[in-house]
Structure formats: C-alpha cells, structure tokens
Amino acid sequence: MSVTDASSGSDTSSRSHTSSGSAEPVRGRRARRLPGTWRRGRVAALLAPAATPVMLIHDHIPDRIGHLGSLVETFLPWTGLVVPLLLVCAAIRRSATAAAAVLLPAVVWGTLYGTTLADKRAGGGDLTVVTHNVNEHNPRPARTARVLAASGADLVAVEELGDDSSVYGSVLDPRYPYHWARGTVGLWSRHPLTDARTVDIAPWSRALRATVRTPEGPVAVYVAHLLSVRFSAASGFGTDARDDSAARLAAALRAEPLPRVLLVGDLNGTTDDGALSALTSPMRSAQEVAGDGFGATWPASFPLARIDHILVRGVRPCSAWTLPATGSDHLPVAASLEL
Image 1 (cartoon, rainbow, N blue to C red):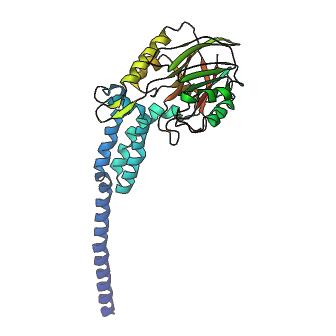
Image 2: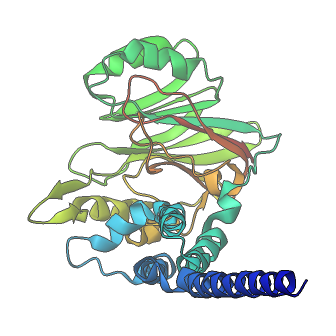
Image 3: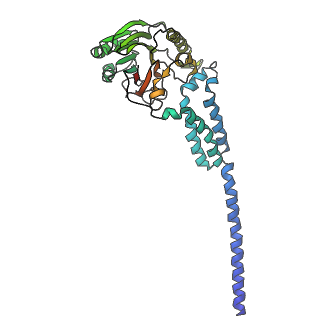
C-alpha cells in the first residue's frame, strides 16, 4: 500500500511537473504573438497616412513642374486603390497596425467620393442631351452615327468629326432637322437653332455656340473640344494648350447673356482638375449631380477618367449616364435635364 502510494505520488508529481513545464512555454508564445500583430507591417502603416494628403490637398499640388497637379487630379479617384492594397498587405503580414492605419485614407476617400458612388438618377426632364467624341480615326463612323441617332436624345453633340462629317450628317440629318457643324464639332437638334457661331478657342474650329429654341424657352448650348493633353519626357503632362483654350471658352461663357446654359463635349480633363476651375466651377456636372458612380469615359476599352462632360448653369440635371462603346476611344455620355 505504501509502495503504491509512493508510486502514485511520484507519477502525480511527474505529471504535474510536466504539465506545468509545458504550459509555461505555450503561454509565453501566446504572449509574444499578440504584440507581434502590432509590431509587424510598420512600412504599410506609414504608407497609409502618407497617401492621405494627396486626397486632401490635391488642389495645392503645384503645376509648375510637369503639370503634376493636373496629372494627379485627372486620376484622383484612383487614389482610393491604396485602401484595398494596404489591407491586402496587412492581411499578408497579419498586422493590426497596418489594418488600423488604413482607416484614415478610407475615411477621407469615403468623405470625398462616397456620395459619388450613390445612384442619384431620377425620372423627369424636358431635354435629353448626348455628346460624343467620335474619334476622327473611328473605323466605323456610320455605325457610331446610328448609335447616336438611336439614343432618342433631343440634342446630339459631336466632337472630332474630321473627314467623316458627311457620314454623320447622312445618318443624323433625317432625324434632326436642325443642325450646325463647323470644323471638328457639330450639333444636331430636334428644336430650332438660332445664333449659331464658332467660338474662338484654337487656331481652328473646335467649339461652337448656338441657341436652342425649346418649348420651355431658349437655351445656350456650347459644344467644345479643348486642345489635347500631351505627354513627353521634356514637359511631362503637357496641358498648356488645353489650359489656354479653356480660358478662352470660360471667357465666352462668362459673357453669355442667356440664363440657361449647357456646355457639352470633350474637355480633356476632369472636374477635379484645378487648371480647369475657371471653366468648370461656375457650372454643375450632370454626372456629379444626377449620375451613378464616376461615369468614366476614356479610354473606352477600360475607362479611367471622365473627360467628356455635360455641364449646366440655370438648369437642373435629373439623370446622367454613359452609353455603350462605339468605334471611338471615348464613351458617349447623356443627361436628362429639367429646364
């Protein structure tokens, strides 16, 4: 009996010692692991807040060196990609620090663009407008013209007519009895056009202005294609020619006597681009007011930026949308407006 007790006591003591000895390392490993989730991913955690100032102070990024400000603002909504990318890094590194740091750019981006993602389209409207840079090298101009004619719009504005002006006219003229085209731009309308003229924004005709006599009253319509932006190693994001044409167009709009004004066309820039603010800030974007999402239009195969616009003054946008791709490198855009 005493031998059994001794053996039992020895076994118990041994098990107790073994159990006690193994439990301590497990607790130690767990104690070390938990703080490690906060120590890992410090580089990703530093990158997250570093991206935030670009969103907040983009309008203060200087344009003097390579027009960097315009370049950033053209693709500004894409800064939001930093959020999912850093979240992936945080997951790979199992870093609570990096995951927490991502909250800052996520909140800032959501504040800037959260309402843009909402569907603000509504019914109603007195006038439907479509505008499209059809691309002068479009391999299927007749098909593109048929798409525009089938849109059912009251007004169709076209940029980059090029040598295919007669092709677009042959398709659109029968459906739109009132039309006026000069140089690379044209306007087709179901309502009478008066006071049509070119607007001097470039050495050749790239903008027009006409009064559309709608049943609700006259509307001044400007169709414009601002000069292109060029990329080069020497000048970077070259916007000088575009900015000069925008300034001339802005002056014409300031002098416009009619209270209801539409500016439609390819501005080769977004409404975020501060270099175009003299032109865009007095107007309202139909897409921003009554669209669904960003409505990017270029390039058509994978749209990255909305450089084609329907801007209004003295008019209420009811709905805005993009049309399916045609043979152009731009997508057409449309809006329903209440006059």
